[in-house]
Amino acid sequence: MSSIPQNAVVWVEIPVADMDRAKAFYGAVLQNELADEAGGPNPMARFRSASEEATSGHLYAGKPAAPGTGSTIHLAVAAPLEEAMERVTANGGQVVSPPIQLPAGRFAYCLDPDGNSIGLFAA
Image (cartoon, rainbow, N blue to C red; front, side, top):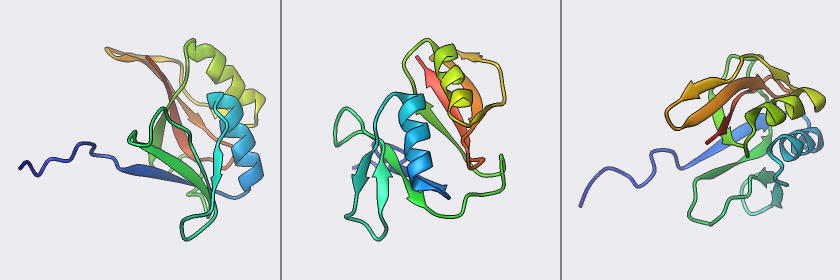
């Protein structure tokens, strides 16, 4: 038996000051409505994924780090990446880099309305 896990990342949590605003922002940018969940220690909104086994994450009411200083979470968007970048600014966020090419696809660094650092990735 290997001690290396199936996924190095189990889930992600993004603290937000205003849950309704954050759900609207992420739903619009990712074009994926978040699902409200009440089964944990705090109310949260979960990013939907294709299966229950997929690595995912959620938003929770909390105190975000100072703008641009926390961890960066990369989130999947449908191509073209530029359209997702436009949705960031149209919904109160900020794009902080041009698209960056990787062998697996392209991504751009952005900030959500709370200043959380996110990367938008399109394969």
